[in-house]
Length: 173
Image 1 (cartoon, rainbow, N blue to C red):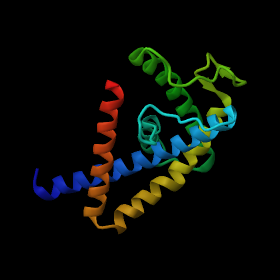
Image 2: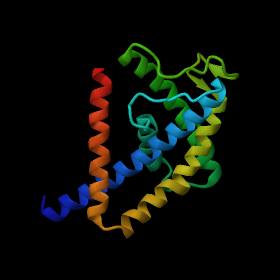
Image 3: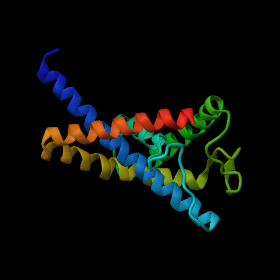
């Protein structure tokens, strides 16, 4: 692999890291808004110390290729709703198996399944899928095209390093 291809790959990786953080931060905002409203006071959500929920970043990368060609509003909304609900259900079991405890519960919400998924959260995920496909992803693509590549690489590197360090600290402590 020559230097030009390496730099192109690294630039793409850094742009992806930026999108990951944007989606993770938006997920954190959504969750603190909902849980703070339900509890009547600020509730800091998340596994990491930084205001990023990685599960939203991971889900965004699963969603992007799915809706690359078929991205009409109803398809993205209902498809995103179905995909993210299935992923949330699977993730709840996986996270509980890895950590020994769950990171969320919808047991007090109407229309929930085993406290792991809920119709209300599924509807919110459908809306967030539309925001991702129609808003966040195109915005990051434009940013990638307009900003100097070194800026994208510096931001992406900082975000990646911060998340890795925070993840290591969070898992250890």
